[in-house]
Image (tube, rainbow, N blue to C red; front, side, top):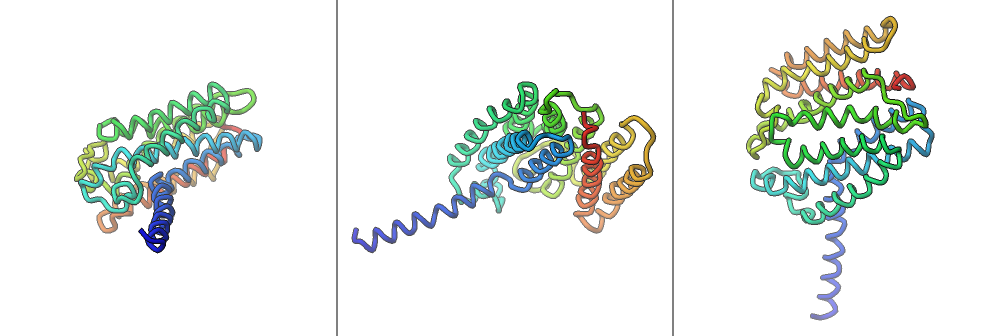
Amino acid sequence: MDATDGAGTATAAGARWPGRAAGLALACHPGPVVAVTVLACALAVGAGLSPARLALVGVAVLTGQLSVGWCNDAYDAGRDARAGRRGKPVADGAVPVRAVWGAAVVALALCVPLSLACGLLAGTVHLVAVAAAWLYNLRLKATALSWVPYAVGFAALPCLVTLSLPDAPWPRWWTVAAGALLGCAAHLGDTLPDIEADRAAGIRGLPHRLGTRGTRVLLPVPLLAATGVLVLGPPGPVDAGSLAVLVLAGAAALLGPVLGRWWHKAALAGAVAVAAADLTLLLALGTALS
């Protein structure tokens, strides 16, 4: 091999690394990772956590979400490849499955001490949620209980935040209930666009058993329930602003499935609108979380 061949090999090897790094970044499901981490940080700000505690909660949630995302793509790589699903970095060969499994394990290993550093109880709650998400990837995703890890994960966020406060109080019941309901809605809404493709890949979670139409019809139920809990749960009279949010959320949630006959993303768009309203209400509670 001459010097030119060596340079060419080195250049090719160097060119693979940016591609692999990009593939690894995409394999973590960056959208959900960022969304959940930002939500946790926003709740922490509202609850009055110190900057150091806020950063600790944010990094703990980030590593947990990264581990879940990488685990998901690594475990599903073979099934995605057999089903011919595009846009999956591992299934497309952009990054080796072994590298993704390695990243998932490293992220999980970092998540454990970071979570426990938030407090023994806070860390335990968060690690239970992360374990539930891994169980979803490895088993529950293809069962009628596919919604359970989402409910557990979203309900755990206000618990992690308030239990990270100096006096470690538990959150108010309505924040936990609303989180669980939003988690169920997130599962239905996230799965809705891909139900047929997932079915072709052999996945039989709750939304896949309900089908596209059934999932579209069910989606408003947990959204409206979450809004109702957030509006009616706190003690005292309901203010006009919260009542207006409840009415508008109901209209958006119910209108989505109706418009879904002509626009297949209408239900998901309505779900996002209601979820945004619910999250606004949840963040407006601020220090009332505990």
